[in-house]
Length: 325
Image 1 (cartoon, one colour):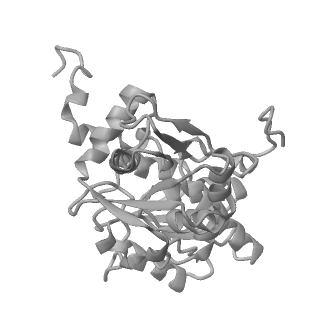
Image 2 (cartoon, helix red, strand yellow; image 1 turned 90 degrees about the vertical axis):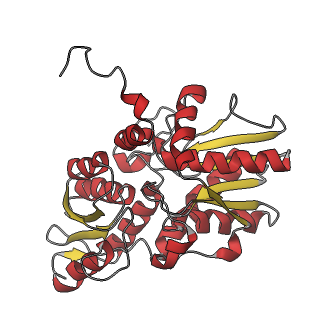
């Protein structure tokens, strides 16, 4: 493994660490306050395409260390897409099977990518994120597989497993501190399983209690896959409100319009969750005037093209020949 020449013996050597961090890139044209430096941490640069590579590898490594996985016994996990893609890709590369349970309204691109990564797919009637509800909800169905077919499946359970948090204490937090030379004053992230915000905040506040942590949540009725607002967080056991200085509620439509602006003005092909986080960071930058902010850009726009067209229909204009029927 040589991070200088970027020559690796396996894809797992490419996973992010303090010595091999995902990049942070400064926001220039769209920054509302020149004295508030804004940097985006580009998690789609991870080998399986999202911030969830970190949690997935931590979960998988723990299962391997405990002897829970084999050619006959694989993983079952409920997911809104990214964790499932990371787990399936990693498991396939290690010779394990994966079954993922996804909500129906997850973008088609993610469902197809899960199958491409080698996962068996169950699609259920949850809205956008795995639900703790009754019946055939994603989480309940995954637990049913893990309980009734113990010889075939083990469930990592990203919503309750502390290895999700520990991944960010070990990697994301130290990377950010090293990349900013300890100058970070503001951290911006979203709410999902809450592993990212809890892990990063735990590490960074241990280094500097004055760092402010902002969690961005979409407005009610949102359709931003993978994100939750506080009213939906009963599914997660990893949420620690004591580590968060402020929760910012943002109109969910801005997730899509701000993502488009990042594409067209900064050259950053960031997904809608990043657009929402960016809007929250801009609001704080305009308020605080000075600072050094880092935003966790969870994944890229490529898995959300259909959602982008749904919210910004003009994107599809001119994409077919004039005479096409």
